[in-house]
Image 1: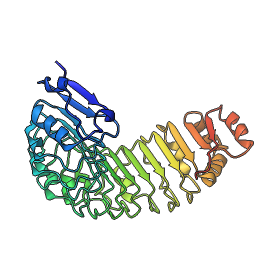
Image 2: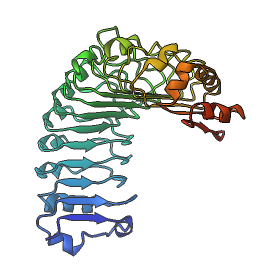
Image 3: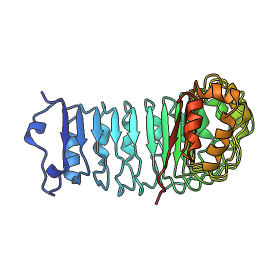
Image 4: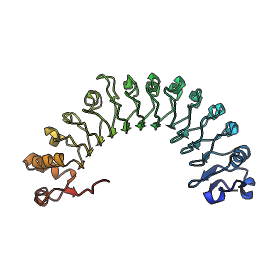
Length: 354
């Protein structure tokens, strides 16, 4: 009657590791999880795939696989397949495209993966996809993954373009791009991605995020930019998503010198700025953002000092009483400013990063 099994690495380290007898007797097994860094042998995986036809969840994270058996196609009921951190897998079998019920496919940190399957568009029920690949361009069939809700590109070191196909993913809600060092631009006409509400760009120093006004996402709610060479936020942000944006998180943007006027961001609730060394002032109309509930300035000493001076005015004092504010600690004046703001300001003393 066993349905769900997790196996620790201690049980799988030996080359002669066998599938436990109780598993072999479980005809309706639904879940197999390999816990921790499990070095499993190919024979073990092949037996699991050939034996347990009712599997819904197969998690082989950090299993040190060198290849995935083509018999994976026999797991017709499979919904969740996690191959993350298998750094020796170079190719996936074409048969993986027959998993028509698959909803989640995670290939993050599969650094040796030469390409994702060309017929990946057959996975019409896929909702969550994480990709690490060596290829330069994505297969055109990716446009057929119209059920996708979450898409992440991680460590795609050769990827030069996301292609125009991405714009056809009109149910995509979250797009994350991380450590793609050769990627220089976002796909054109993201305005067609009407469901997109979250965009995260991390450790992509060449990616400029530039598009013409009217071509950017029209309903963005959350924007995260970390470790970018951006000198200014893209104009489409204030023109295409001003009426919907609720959260802005900026970190490690050392070339960023100014923020645009935020007065049109009527629904902005959270503004987080961390280690943006050239940013020296916030927009004057910040106090007009009636929905703002959280403001954090961390690792930006000049910006914190500037904002403290602004807080002494009546409008800033009023804002400090309705917004949770976190700033870099400076000197004894912080306590006095905090008393004026009715204790609503938190000061952080950050340790220097080594």
